[in-house]
Image (cartoon, rainbow, N blue to C red):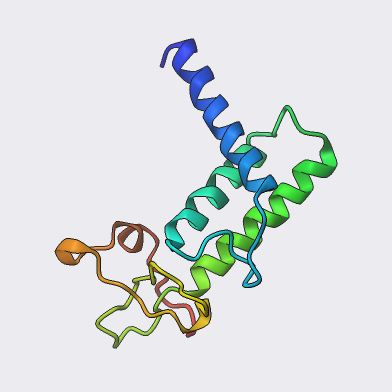
Length: 126
């Protein structure tokens, strides 16, 4: 990868992390209710930036970013259907509505949830 491409990727990562740190959270603790994946994407970018050392941030902001990113990622993972007998096993809801805890898993077009395929939480208690 050339230096310009790497620099641009690092800049995008930092911008997404900065945005995640500055976004207001809803009463549910999520940033977004319309599409759960947006919470996942921002949390992953935030954690990735912190794990790369967050060179443009002070130590206190790095620690706060790690806590926020981890908390958000765990909130997203908690909504995954973890019941092996369920036809929606491994799937997440998309639109969380007004009560994220009551949101039902969603089958994406084509019947495959790419995020679920990669992050299926096998063996965790429901």
